[in-house]
Length: 156
Image 1 (cartoon, rainbow, N blue to C red):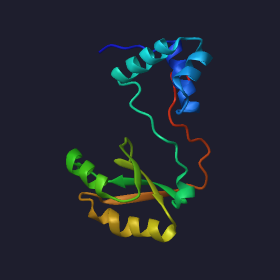
Image 2 (image 1 turned 90 degrees about the horizontal axis):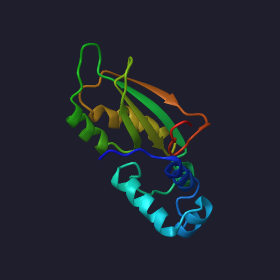
Image 3 (image 1 turned 180 degrees about the vertical axis):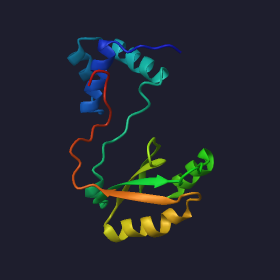
Image 4 (image 1 turned 45 degrees about the horizontal axis):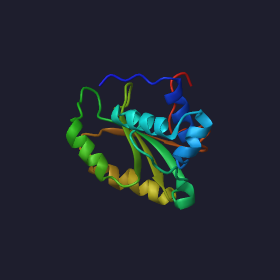
């Protein structure tokens, strides 16, 4: 399905980014649209896959995960990680909020959230050892999250 978001779609998404719990009536009023037009646009955004759902924005530190780290995983020179087994193993790991295949010296980037340094140490020394094919890691401790946006719209 071919879909191109227009300025009204982007304004709707920007309004939802600010407060995903806003009513359709409130969105319609701010965007100078009818309620049915907002409903139709939301349906169109969902059907196109541009709007995949509504989720709360959670402060993990307030929930007890006060330590964040980016962990770079490497398979080693000439080695190749098998995607599906890797994905399954990473899904089984605790504390992993985000994982991505990356370019450069590392192969995988993880965002890990832990309660404290002891829990992070346990993750790095014990949990990561269960992932097959890894030859090295590099851990970057997050000191402060300067920018943490849920998503960017085109042009931002």
